[in-house]
Image 1 (cartoon, rainbow, N blue to C red):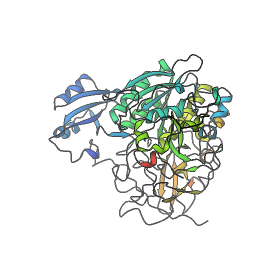
Image 2 (image 1 turned 135 degrees about the vertical axis):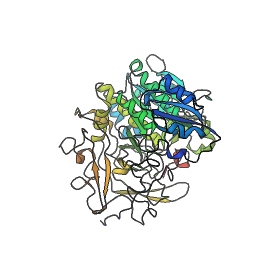
Image 3 (image 1 turned 45 degrees about the vertical axis):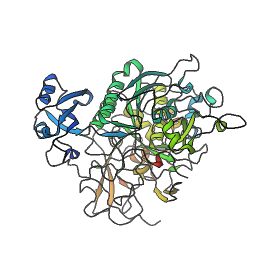
Image 4 (image 1 turned 60 degrees about the vertical axis):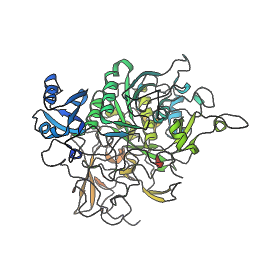
Length: 557
């Protein structure tokens, strides 16, 4: 097989903004006459004294974000330089927008086999941070007839009803729906989710158009963490994201998910749907969204299944965002799971009006004759749909072994993911007719395809952290090596070595990704003048935001 030509990828150096600046790059050029909402991170948790310091330059406290030692303030833009000169301030970012990024799928990832052994997520709380979750039979406990939605709170001031947009209900159904509105009996329901007995915390951050802000998401993460003991919150699902603007070490969203992870909660995040973006000749690489770029969390890419009961012919979806991440070069995603044309709870009037072809007709679900009536289910596609697959699998694992740490859950799921991965595949956009060539490498599928049943059948427990490694490019040899932080699970040992966790089909050679001369992509010209590995700075450009495009709904043939 002919080696693939190196494509210098669109990545940024580890410096952030102009040298020594405490202001995020996207605060440059703001009209000084305007008032803006900013997240201010401090050296220590903000006190009344810190709030007064901000007030002295015309700022108003809007929300405390103690989880990231920060506050949300509205300040006059003209005061930004004074804010940056405050010795107690570490970093300032705008309150950025975030966007919403089962019948066959549950069987494919091994969930139905797990259900047969009574691993159904019972007693485990999953926080769905999204657009809300509707009331549905799918979220009731069949025995008690009580809802499994144990807590609700909206961080969207304009919210009305339970889910104006529809995205969150669809996501929740994949993670923890019991298929109560579909055909079948008990745990043989057609559209059952991965952890059908898990409890749900509905933390609403996205509005009727599927749009939210950093501060809302951070506040919801804080709330989930504060409720951990009360509701046994062990998993947070974030099927949303936004472009990367700075290192994860400074990004307030990333700092929030790290705080939850360190508090003992598994955080599962969508990779993003920008895998087709070739604006800079990167073949979609470098498009992982924040906070999926954080090395702690489990970042999930989307598979394109063939609507059968096996994973062996599943392929990566062309829209699934690919790593390594901008700026920090973190190897992402960590796992891939089914995300294409996934059937779950009705996605709301927005999707019905704009994509009526994805409505599951009543007679396609129930045995009936005559005209089809209103359906309670809908097909959607995207990494948003793949993410709750992994969240549900984590809940199954934590029901079986509640003492597992988030790092141990991540390591177990990655190690026992399916490694039978093709080298490449083709997919066609049903709207445009464009055919894409998809490389199934470590920056597309991570450690492999989710296999919940395999993870449940092993008892190996990793020690240390499970931080995702970074990728280092050696221009002299045209190779990419994996670099691990001190104390991480992945090493050279037999049990947790890279060849075991990521598989020899993805990593070949002694510590080198694919060996000499083989890197991702399909060949081509350098990715733009002066934009090469580790040089140049791109602040979120070329990274379409969220999942608002057609590929988020229609998927691929």
